[in-house]
Length: 157
Image (tube, rainbow, N blue to C red; front, top):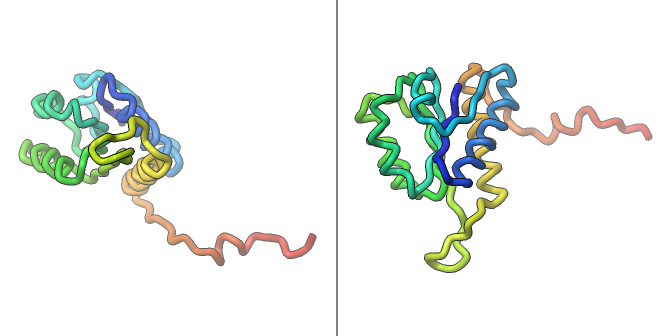
């Protein structure tokens, strides 16, 4: 599996690494690779693309070269409509976009976005990676249950 992230965009790279971390938690034997070379990334069966707003236009024209059977899309700083539009365009080109996530930075004040991603976006990216790992391995997510969490606690001290 190869992850693609936008060149010269630290948020897309950070998200890509978080998704990889979540994936490795569930599917530790899965082979992963980070790359900035889109040509290299097109040769894989499963591709995760992490994009940022300023690079959308430059990435879609070369999407015709993607040979991946399964595609996942993560947007750093994109809104839901933009992610849906990119997904639609990729599907029109015959690509199977299996899942996508929209990660937004928080606004400091109206119209001015903070440069760094918050912990909640990073946690969502990691959970997205876990979900991908579960899908790839055919596992189901386990329901969180407080009883199961504490049943191994010792009552004697």
